Length: 156
Image 1 (cartoon, rainbow, N blue to C red):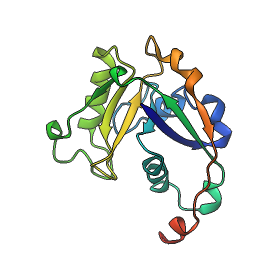
Image 2 (cartoon, one colour):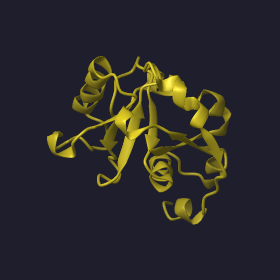
Image 3 (cartoon, rainbow, N blue to C red):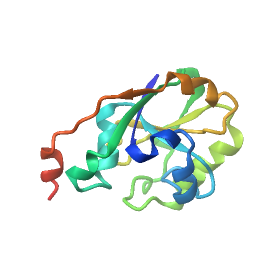
């Protein structure tokens, strides 16, 4: 499964370390745990960044990466099992607990989770500490990336 990550260009070298997520946490895990969030499509990767970045000049400083992780290495979180507030703009503690528990019990590389922005699409939270994660780093590709500035101007 090809997964996509839009990251600030200055962090490309550490894009797969999970350091940012370890320092700041995320919707699906608690602070202190390295994680790498990726999207199942380029457009979703862009949307996941656009909700946090409002300046088209800033988007020029992003790089698009892809990684190929076998589907049998990705667990799937069923959206029907989630509490009603799972996609609130401020991530609730319950989603962080779900992801943090997955880290404790799973041996797979990723957990597919619904996007809070587009719930019918999915992101994948990767565990860079998983035993076999390093095997897939050689599949990483740096893709050409450009975005139509109208997407950001429409937000203003």
